[in-house]
Amino acid sequence: KYVGIELTEDASAGGGYARELGPEDQSRQREMLIDEVARSDVVITTALIGGVFAPKIVTADMVRSMRAGSIVVDLAADGGGNCEVSVPGETVDVDGVRVMAPLNLPATVPEHASLLFSRNLTHFISTFSDGGSFQIDLEDDIQAGCLIARDAEIVHGPTREALESLAADAPHE
Image (tube, rainbow, N blue to C red; front, side):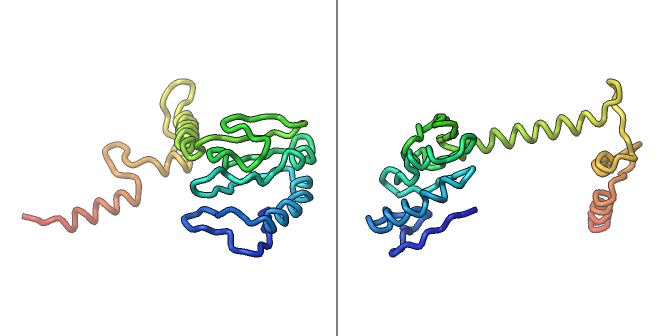
């Protein structure tokens, strides 16, 4: 769950960034997080402040208070990290708690999307193979739904309708 903290002043600096908290709010944040972090199985931090290092929000003692097997994901690692024990670009173990501090996480999205797409495509194509020969199973809803033409006829309803509409709208000589 998201953990919100009542602050005495607005911490937003615009453009998706925060500004550094004053000493009173830093203390309030630290006190509130002590119990929350200790009870959590997963802690994800994201606080970045434009032009300066990321604020250290999760202390080493907070991490040590977590149950073994818990995870901290420090998404502010590019800015130095929100967790005192984060090592940017690495995953470390602190008393059985895994602390992950990935760098440039947005750049990994295409890689994962490509892997997922290729896995889905491989699985899809394998459904057409029966002992090494290519077979179309018209009883399979997915295969039937992907089939556009068969025996020189458009069998996919929406495609057939679109082509018929284009043909009807085409100028005739």
